[in-house]
Length: 76
Image (cartoon, rainbow, N blue to C red; front, side, top):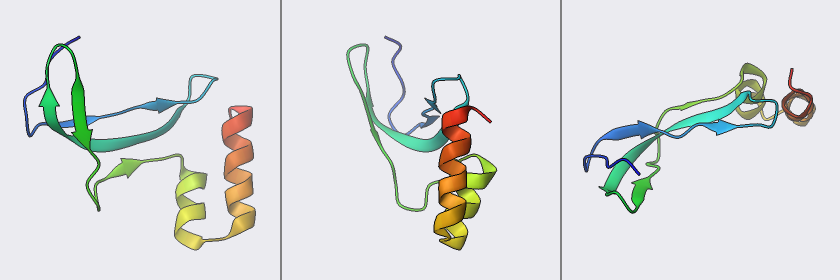
């Protein structure tokens, strides 16, 4: 495994089955060696998400959240 410099910002990509990006949070490296990568997800860190999911989180509308989930599952 590749090592990462302590304090560096890295992105973790969460990919759903159809190969589509589900989320991509920015993480800070606490320890990065050839054996382990320990990161922290800091409060307020940036996260990329599909537009519908981001809208559902912003508006708090359950119907939009259901639509976002259905879109993720179907690969739209």
